[in-house]
Length: 456
Ligand code: MLT
Ligand code: ZN
Image (tube, rainbow, N blue to C red; front, top):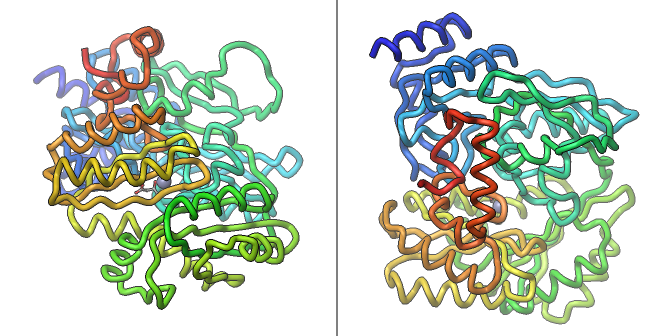
């Protein structure tokens, strides 16, 4: 008890009384994740405002062997950012400085707590674009998206978060500060710490700031929603769009049942009078108008049954809503089981049929919602009507994915939700290497100790 009191006293001295939050009502916002499925508890939420305060916080916790969960916008979907085992929450949201866009380098430096939406607006105002985009953009932070190597809507064109990170500044569990924000595009000098920390899910260090690569801002954006009779036709269409249209930057897939749910729950008008099986949402963005090339590609697809095209912002947002609102509409049915998986491109259609079939046999009363990033082979399998602690659904879906040579996590990470299944896709030697890296950087094992790596 005295050790815990000592720690609180030290943390208050580091970040100030107001930033060691113990008020239950406020703490509640940090202890439940975005899906509502993962709830934890914490003695305190610590909110450092500078890199040196992060360093002193981590050092104090390490010296006492007290576990920490690092948190950004808390939009993670795999239980990796909430204190499920009573850890102290270290929120990095107060680190929200955003530097000027470096026009010569096409880069910007952002602290961990800057939201994705703010970073995007900042880049756009300077004539650039930050390539990572996802539905949780208003809350998700630079630090959180780096910790999870967030993917999102533009991965097949620009790569995931890791491809945007030129460098990071990070604090190790010991309080040591590592990394560089100098923005050198070529710097072949040893282990690439930024690459290692990106996707490490808060288990190796606290990323406090990053030097991020920007891409040219497209002046023209066109969105089309195409309807198909079945998923195989839809995926053939996706391949044609990828091959023919160099401005394509998002190619998303969803199905009639998901569209019905979104429209019914959120009161949206249906996009088409007729019902179809599969829908592909395409966004093209370029310096010159991508509309003619997109129209020609769609025209060449005999299997397109219906199409809606948006060349203005308002209509584009309306079409996007059918896809982006899936998460919100599904959550209204109760906390879902969320599986985020990738399949080899050729196996994606077969997976859609087989996962529905397998889940129907396993839990006949469950509802299965599929949507995702078609061009990346990334399906989000959401299952509702199953108790939150029933792991049979996760087990069945992940084993099917592995059988079909896919990955159990495409873009959400492992968190606490999937660590029991890591061995399905990583060998014993690989997991041992992960553990060795973890031990080297965090010998006391205080940083997010229940995420990513399987328990002993
Ligand atoms: C999405 O693609 O909409 C996100 O990954 C969120 C989700 O899977 O619910
Ligand atoms: Zn996604």
